[in-house]
Structures are given as C-alpha cells and as structure tokens.
Image 1 (cartoon, rainbow, N blue to C red):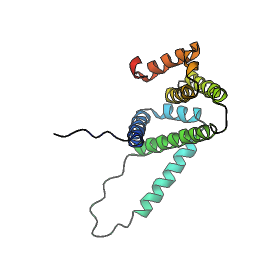
Image 2: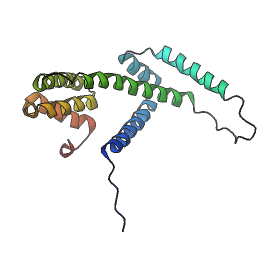
Image 3: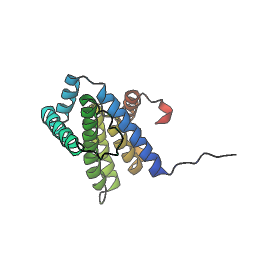
Image 4: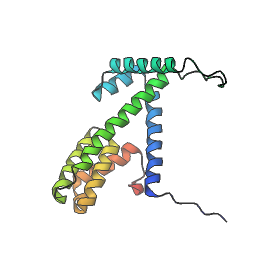
Length: 174
C-alpha cells in the first residue's frame, strides 16, 4: 500500500508559482499584438524597446549556438518569435511582481500590527480596484494575519467577493 507524500509548504508554493507562471505565459501568448502592447504600456514598459531587447538577445543566443560540436544531435528549430516574446513578457511581469512584493514584505518589520494591517488593506483594496486579484488577495491575507477583526469591514468583505469572482474561485476556498 502506498501513501501520497504531502509536499512541504515551500515545495507546494514552488509548484503553485510554476503553475501561475505557466498560466500567465499562456494568457500572454493568446493576446494579440495590440493587446500585448497596451498591457505592457499600462505596466510602464515600452513595447518597442522590449522587442528590440528580445531580438538582440535572440541574435546573441543564435550566434553563441552557431557552431555546435560535430557529435551533437540535430538542433530543434527555434520557437516562433511570438512565443519567445510572450515568454520574455511573462518573465518581465514576474520580475516586476517580485520587485513590488519584496519591499512590501521588508516594510513589515518594525511597524505596529494594526497600523501596518491598515496600510496593507489600503494597498490591497487599490489592487482590487485595478483588478489585480492575486495582489489584492495576498495583501488582504497578510492584513488578516495582523488584524483579524478588520476582515469584518464591509469594504474588505466586498473585496473578497470581487476576488472570488475575478479568480473564478468558489467561495469555500477563500
């Protein structure tokens, strides 16, 4: 008889992050060029500059792999430019998310719990207004750990409902 091994929390988190990154890459790959440009511009990036950077990187990689060893198996054809561009965009968005999350986590040290919970909720509710559901949920969850009573506020309950609808999650999993 075999039993399923339960993943430690850090491994489970890694699996969830990989799944989220894969889902984001698929979503970005399904966008039209105009939609992708608009989304990048909304995030503060210059689509033309990113394309040029991606093209330069692709050329650099092609040049580095131009002289494969004689015994090497045939090289597969490179991915289409659209797929490479989508992967670069997804990686850039993930890096931006990490750049926002790390300073937020660092600021938690030394602040009073109720005051910090209030700030976290304010930032999370702002993310909800911009339909950034995961960021909103993470902020509200962090605030709940510091100040559980704040969960009963009407704006927090309304935000939780919007998150569930935005992520298409059943209410029981929140």
